[in-house]
Image 1 (cartoon, one colour):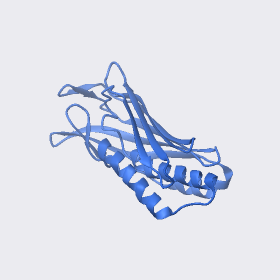
Image 2 (cartoon, rainbow, N blue to C red):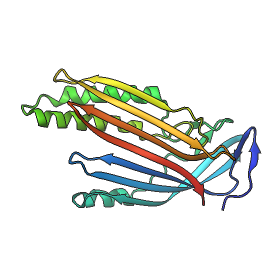
Image 3 (cartoon, rainbow, N blue to C red):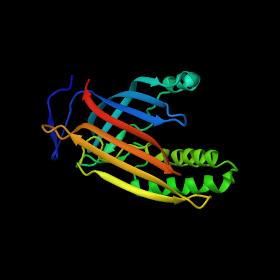
Length: 219
């Protein structure tokens, strides 16, 4: 169980271990979904004058269609701990670790990656096949946006994000990234209660969704 709270500047944080949960959901091309839920045990500590959060993965479950069982087994066996340790600012923002967190840079990188893939893919003679390929490429390019922790994840600032960015497709149509992020904190403490991030990719009247939810609970 988490211990009593103590002050770090104006920041309050748990003195005992906590569980950080992430559930990732991704639409597949046939309308099915793959859902991956991971849990890390994390510890907030003051080290050398800075606030550090270390963690280790303690569980992973994968819900996927039977035809993807081999890939699901690989994902379930994979340990994801490379984002730790995290270094937090005095206001609770992640300033180091958690992989990249510059939202503007990540979105620009996703758009650049989509353009690169389109330039290499050539044209399809079949419109439906072309639309499906474009949609898959947009979704793949958007993945880096979910491969990071939001900077305010552990101590939400309560500022939602809603962005829409467009990409020119090889067939002259327009593809689109739509990105939502919302988070809420526990009133008594200020640390994470739950957060949700969703990315929608669209082209030729079709769309796919990738999303994640985070929550922080007592160990």
